[in-house]
Image (cartoon, rainbow, N blue to C red):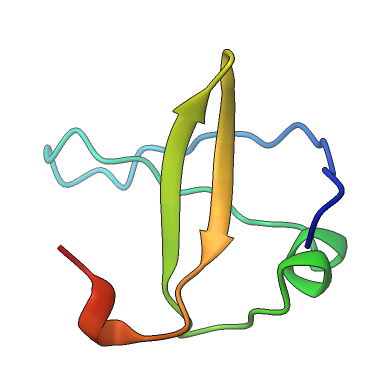
Length: 62
C-alpha cells in the first residue's frame, strides 16, 4: 500500500496490569493493509503518526 489511510481508534486496557493496550482496527483499515485476524503487524512511529504494516514473512521479525 503506498497511500495512507488515517483513522482514530480507542485504546482499551486489557485489565491484566501489563501496561499493554488493545485496539480494534476497523474493517477498512484491515482491508487497506490486506490483513485479517491472526496476521502479524509491525508498528512504527513516523512524523508523529503510528504506522502499521502487515508482516508477510514471520522470519523477518526481530
